[in-house]
Length: 398
Image (cartoon, rainbow, N blue to C red; front, side, top):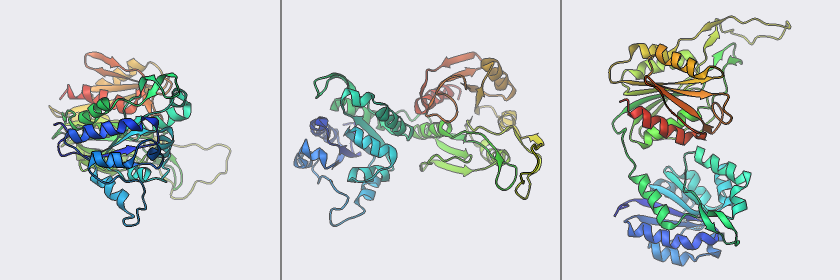
């Protein structure tokens, strides 16, 4: 029923909500899944490993060093179709967010190649603390899926948000993960992301502060919906995930990106231009480092090739071209002019006047504009959610 043949790792942390994990394990098994359980040491203070071993039908893992197989965490990370941590404590959330690794569960999380769903459980004040909020946002930005906490009576006697989601609700999240709409199956998508660096000399360049987070969120969303993605990526520090349907071309300059896009665009069903490409480059690149001498220095710059406009000029019937506009004034006017000039089917407008939106953040707030005008304007949301909204609208233009 629903999860037949799926391989699930259930991670359990030290929380009073751990008693619910027994029911969750039972539901997974009843739904046809093969379940392996990992418990932190403190989880054993709340529920017996024997209980979970009996319900899952397999040995419960509690330590990286079991005396026989030091690489078990790697094997488990490769084995699973999904990793579900329920409950996850504030402590383990902080571990995951910052790469700390001193438990079997930490090690499997860092080794896992699958989707990770996490269901927090903690008291009200812990849940709303800025540190917890920041760590949760970081986990979401990594592509992990939050199963929201629920409102109700807490172990402390307080009433509020912080209760772990009920096992049946977590089961729904897992089923939805495996049965999500693969509406981009078979589609080839070209996505650009990150900045470009235009060299002045061997050590300096003209660039911008783009992190590539929005573009990478779009990549992940397209992959999860069944697409094959060609990513042309500028120099970023973000960790790039691997996927069998993802090919990555790393570039430095706008000229590099233009060449890569020219190769891949002709076979693309959809192209999404999310990169922050430099508009100008030095007319010459000095072969040696420019020495500090005069109080002032003048640089001669020349326009870079307009990649989006170049692709728009050769766009074929059936191809969909989506662009981005980051503006600081007259946002709607400038975005619409850009959409028309570059032959975009959709343009995604970011405003630097919206706090928490645009470059360098894990959140964004966009206005989607098409030939019919403004299609929709979002609230400030995690970039993963913005990516879903953008792809939902893009699909309508295929």
